[in-house]
Image 1: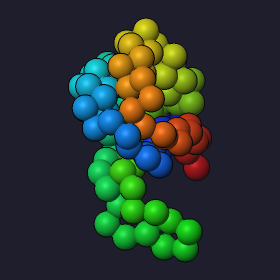
Image 2: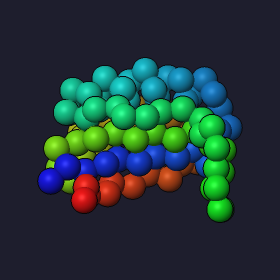
Image 3: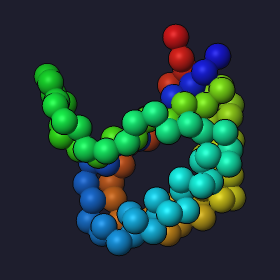
Image 4: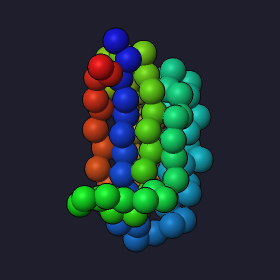
Length: 95
């Protein structure tokens, strides 16, 4: 069953750190089998939604998404982010 890595940026305090993170995170995620489906600032938000940067990545399974997150390459990207943003990251199984 597929799984979706959903990440929203609640606050960005250091755009340079976010850019450095993205340069490392993208290749780490795709090398682990992730497929970027959407990334960017929301065009429209309803109900309690916020116009914030969001990223949706598809994996073949929850286990594959967790392995990508826990991989040394992605952990290196997180170390570079180093407080440059407040994010909400979740992995959701597909329907």
